[in-house]
Length: 74
Image: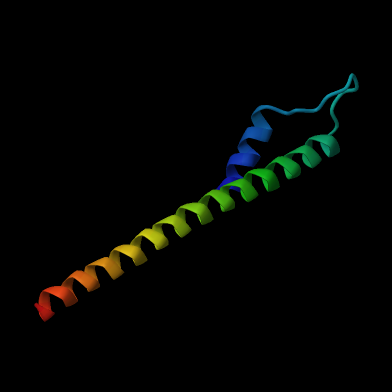
């Protein structure tokens, strides 16, 4: 998903600096760099979201199991 965003934004807004006309090679290199960057950022964001949700679910499961056990024992 991040690679698609990177490819799309690189195609719309090329960040090639300099006075010479951009060649196909320069545009392709910049698209590759931006695609990889967006893909890495999207992967980190996804990992953070998945890790947080896993932590919340595991904690809530332990709390629910403890409450159920206390209810059965009392």
